[in-house]
Length: 289
Ligand code: FES
Ligand code: ZN
Image (cartoon, rainbow, N blue to C red):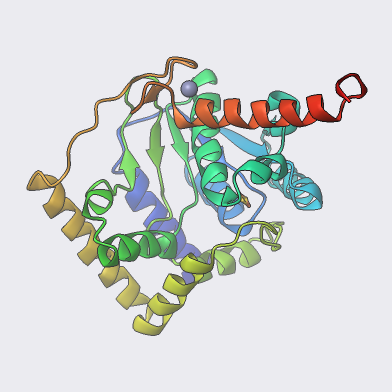
């Protein structure tokens, strides 16, 4: 017998997924945490006919990344799926800890790497869509921040589903109307193994402040949904009144994936990090002393 929470989570995920164009193969970003572990569970249970590829990015943040990969493996195994792992250090020759030496605000670099790599891996594996486990509060924080900082262009670009565009695979966020607390309950109910530890280097002070404010404003879960609908409507209005300039995307001069600049921000940052590390090695090698 399914519980009320299970029913609500499943229904909200189905409502979102049914809005997407028909797809065959889905890549699911699996971090090893409760959110993505629950997404993989509810999606595979609800759509047994779809092909699912769980993808894990090992960012090289010491014991945290090792534990994250271990939990992601357990979650994939439980669903009877093979986990695709991209190890940053093995593939690119550096870790997020190395990246932090040149980019102290490493969260935005990390976010850029995650978005880029998930898309690239999904594209190479011929997936039709990438599913990520961003939940209701993630969206509310982002939209609130945009409104209060007059980031109307950013708000107008807000979408819970992004269609395929050339070599950019479609993106779906089926948990956009599911609150984090409910996802945690779902994970516990279903006995999903997950890592509860948070990233030790990500300093998200601002996000935490917005998050707390939303918790104070929305005393009931239904209020969060109401805010979500209001802000989504506002985003649509901004889109329809031409408040945004449509950015023309062209292939990155280095990797070929569509980007707004000449070279995409992933390639630019990778180049900078590698150059920085090489300079460090050269100055410490015995021949240069
Ligand atoms: Fe990206 Fe921590 S997971 S900075
Ligand atoms: Zn590139």
